[in-house]
Image (cartoon, rainbow, N blue to C red; front, top):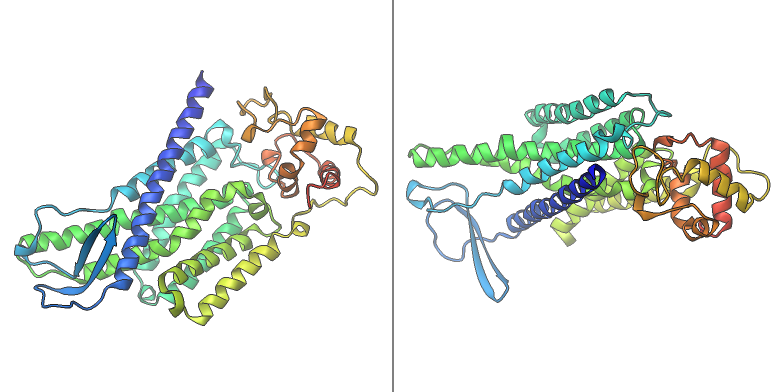
Length: 396
């Protein structure tokens, strides 16, 4: 009964996280698009109007006017805030981190072949990384460097790459990728909670009191919002990365992540500017994608042992799988931390092995499975199994 409750808790929290993330990222896309499409007012307007925009949707027409600040008599009776999308995304994401990566012995987080950590050590480091990310980013965002978006972005890419490199020597590949995303997501949520919303509140308070409004607060809030905007696609990838072991299981996972972050930022820049995208940005985006492809080619993820000289028999492959894989991938898993076969895949019969060979091959090649190598698959066994899986046509 407890395992069933945990599974439903996982499902509901993940569902809520995806919904909240869609709403938050959708808001980011919308408001950045609005800002980039504002035009000069077509008629005289009162107040500090910086632009206007007309839209049509669902059979109606919408007029949007942006003001840099408000006068006391311009304060509306109802002002809509966009903050809970951010907060709910982070809260549900944090709960998922705890449910999936902290509980059950932190089996998705610890890889003893990388570093022998206790569950307590892994969880403490995981939580500490979230705090450290906010402290470092916020400190840098207060320096003059933040005024140069390109230079600030290059510094950020360097720090993300260094973090990914360091974590790939501490956590499992899957855990390292997820934690880079969790750190970036925490930075984004902290921007909303600690910087953007307080700046807006301060501007409204000054307006209500009839005091001069410090519009630099709005400019700084906009800068933080822009940082968040360009992090959306990289964070989305890290949320999905556990489904793609060829990335975090490659020979240089930190480099793959750096290329993917660059590619995500480049795509977002192109979405914003379209035909006005600078040539250097397009070239960098294409090179980043080429880097991902090159770094994740099958040859870069081969096991360290040499492939066996001859063919591997069906019986030998089944023996390896029964010893190293079926403790989890079975109708009734025997591993204490697994209650149901991951993705519903069972490898208990020769027919099942051949049926799911294409799903098994990338997991075995990248060393993503067995999870954290809990069943102690040797390099020779891995090489034998890869050879057998490829003989079934899985790599074609």
